[in-house]
Length: 116
Image (cartoon, rainbow, N blue to C red; front, side, top):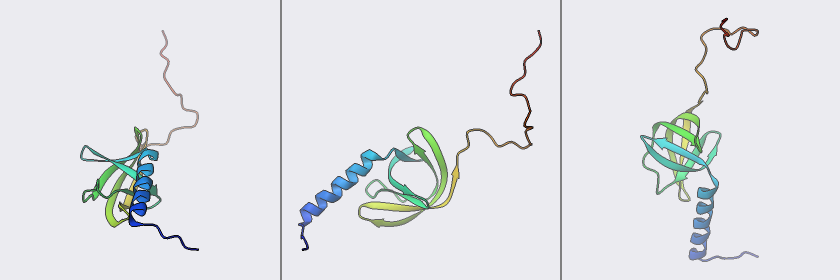
């Protein structure tokens, strides 16, 4: 048996789904000092609310809470079900320390203790 739902009920269900995605996700996108909440993310891209989404493209920063996850190069995808989808051209994980330009010995001292 197939149940038919009115357009108002379907719109209400879509709004409730979108609201739950907003509350559940801690992901956010930062572009030129502006912050956009990320509804969901997958391996090759992410989605933000279509009404919040300007025509984004280029270099952006992706955060989870206050933790900087990725610096991404993005292109706009398609809009579907109130979401604007973006694809990664490049997503580089942010390192906690600068890359070393030399090989660190396994038995190297962690710190220098000066003699008194």
